[in-house]
Image (cartoon, rainbow, N blue to C red; front, side, top):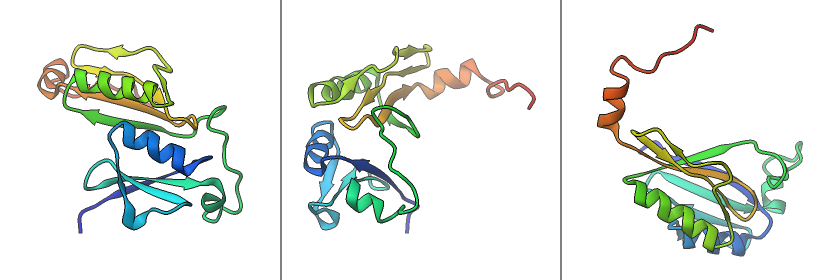
Length: 147
């Protein structure tokens, strides 16, 4: 079996969040979806599990769900094949109930990124990296300061 990742996100409204993620290009897997949760596939190995607060709470009964419209616990980066694809998903997110460019777009020449929030405030960073240009910019790898 391939290594996979399932990112579990608590949401206030499963149906609304499902529609948002479908609008920006995710595919709902009906085998693992119901009124409490939607399995939203990004690729063959990456799935967002959109879980209503009551259901999500069954996994972490000892902690309160963070209000992601006020605090941030995770930043999810999505890779794309072009700058245009980064722009397209960011604009789709904005048009579908999310918020585009919650921080300034970043253009480092070899890497280009934008950001958006979903309707619950979870932050995503779509990005494109020209690996050939990145390797030319950092032939010995990125410089790191000593710890």
